[in-house]
Image 1 (tube, one colour):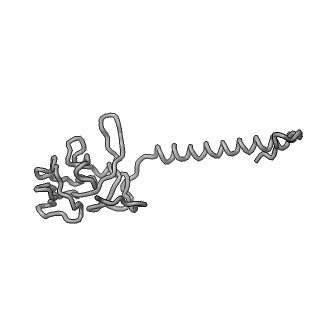
Image 2 (image 1 turned 90 degrees about the vertical axis):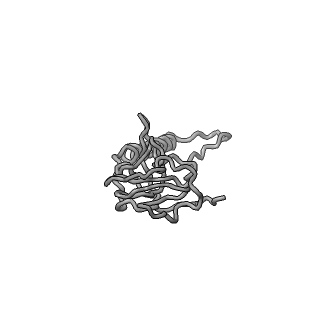
Length: 165
């Protein structure tokens, strides 16, 4: 960028200084423009519907959850689908009275609201975190059943999967 050597007696010409200043201004403008695009168009954009069709059982999804005046995003796994009944009994998940296989190898210690039949309406889903014994999900009353409008997206891949111990 700047070839000016502190120990040289030569000073850069005005043309070099102007060129250097213009380069800096250009870089700053480009940086601000990129930040503006991310914040304004991506960060503030109205949330779109689930883009990959209807959520399916065991899909990992991103949800928008509201708690009073705050909104946060959470990753959960879809367990129950609209029209189904979910119940957790003896550490296992039952969908319409049939045991769900393939979700968790661990025994579920807390059934929460699902200790009794949870009937899902046409637009409702039952979700749980992968760490089911340490997750705030549809089993707790402040979250409960999830509406389709709360789905932000689907997780289609991961870079690294943690080993279970």
